[in-house]
Amino acid sequence: MAAVTRLVKHSRLSAVPSFWKAMTTATASSSASASASLSSRSDLSSRSVQWVFLGCPGVGKGTYASRLSHLLGVPHIATGDLVRHELSSNGPLSHQLAEIVNQGKLVSDEIIISLLSKRLEAGEARGESGFILDGFPRTIRQAEILDGVTDIDLVVNLKLPEQALIEKCLGRRICGQCGKNFNVASINIEGENGMPGISMAPLMPPSQCASKLITRADDTEAVVKERLLVYSEKSQPLEEFYRNRGKLLEFDLPGGIPESWPKLLEVLNLDEHEEKLSAAA
Ligand SMILES: Nc1ncnc2c1ncn2[C@@H]1O[C@H](COP(=O)(O)OP(=O)(O)O)[C@@H](O)[C@H]1O
Image (cartoon, rainbow, N blue to C red; front, top):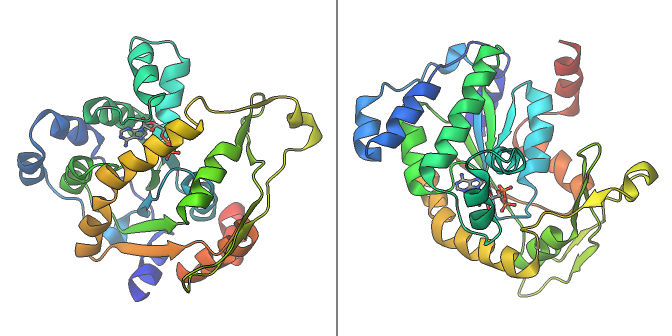
């Protein structure tokens, strides 16, 4: 916990580690040599937090990463959003991406790193500092590339039972007009084998959004199950990767946002007071 407290203190400090271009270069070479050839940025005392959120599809990475990004004043960067943005732009990659995403498969490391590098460079040009990454890294190779170009301070691994993950993905809705996320699933899973049960209330849209809700094309039951399989095969090994480096914070969500958010703040040694401070800054 002391390490987390120390990291949180660093969130007040600013300066931008400029490693985005190095990351693109790293993708082009092998990850091992990339790690060796690129200088590591480890000056924690002069920069904002660099956190990663891990967790299965539907666990709520986006929700909690976004809340923490407001609290800590760092950008929340979700590679899934970058992919969906590219898809909707009808650019040269969109046809290829649609096929991959709608089958629940992973986009190539090269494409993801190119999208992420562009996003980070644009942020750097705007003076952004630090980040909370959501959905990246998702493979050991991506983690090695990231590891070769910068230091990640903390990796938060969110966890929920599989039944809840499927129901949450199927209940996910987005307002086509304002872009806000909702969830119409009402989850009640009984505890068994010593594991506690879990209840999550739906997050219903207000009336102005109710008629404009859309569902992600990859949130069908078959595709969600495929994404969960891909996660356990390609992304689960990241837990060990970061655990071995002493960076992994495991967090079993105790319920929906009202129960989970205060507990998450508690384990991160943050409180709502910091939210007001960062809003006022
Ligand atoms: N780091 C990544 N590597 C490869 N593909 C990715 C990555 N991030 C996102 N994607 C692609 O975008 C899709 C949607 O990502 P995301 O919104 O993070 O979904 P999920 O709800 O499954 O966590 C993924 O299924 C995958 O096809």
